[in-house]
Image 1: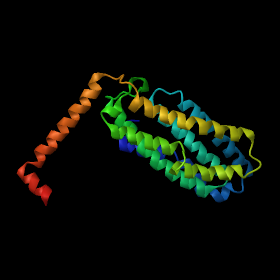
Image 2: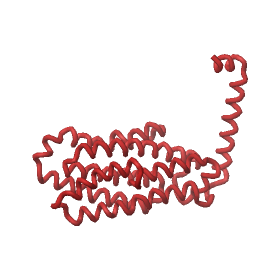
Image 3: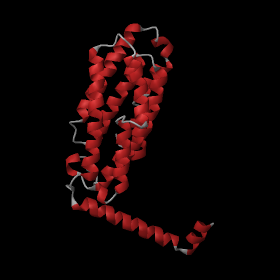
Length: 236
């Protein structure tokens, strides 16, 4: 798929990928009477979140890493639907959609910064040129990892409370959740370090083009600002 970065962020974070989960919530009245279907959703969601978290740790393409992260997070939602905690699922769906949309925009900015390169092994040193990128990466990673005092921690805590209070949950599901809890902070802060604080391994043209574009945009802004008609419009 080829689309502008904002459109791609919208599609991959909060529309198409969570449409199935939203349909389950809408038809929750039917699912509440399907006991074996709920068991299937629990096992499917647990295996999905563990598989997505493990796969994300072995990706070198930043877009694939974020995609597997989305798969892992949707596993939480499907597993929560199996436990019939639809309010908690809807809350975490909104939290995840906002954070993942922001993350896709940041990833798109990072890819443009490195001249279209998506390989994490050829990235690094971005904080020297764009420190706000490092701050945003850290904030979104902190939230998606579900670390304490974050919105992601609040949403996951609601789902985890629903799971731990049930006695029929199997050890497989508990193990899958544990794997995801361990792997999610690892790959989120790994990508933050490789992009922002790692050694500069990209082409010199990537960094020089960033400075050139900044200088060009600044010059164009100043030129348009001090142009008399534009200045009067700006002041008005």
